[in-house]
Length: 76
Image 1 (cartoon, rainbow, N blue to C red):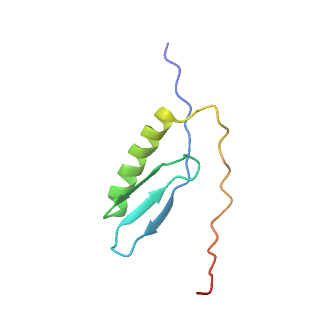
Image 2 (cartoon, rainbow, N blue to C red):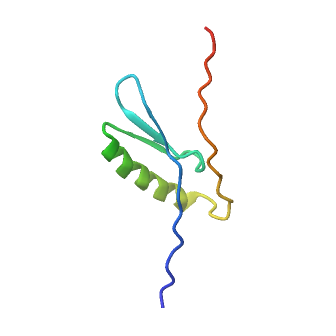
């Protein structure tokens, strides 16, 4: 009998660069990020990136709790 796998959720930070590319990163997975021209394509790519990162990540590490995002402005 096959045991169903445990579902996991990941928070993704999405930004847009100066050239219009969407950049997605997963703070809880070191080095897990990708980019795409559209949000739909970014979603597909970030799912693939998460799967690849999980293959090499230590799955015994406790998940991080998402608290929020803060923007900090520094005077130039």
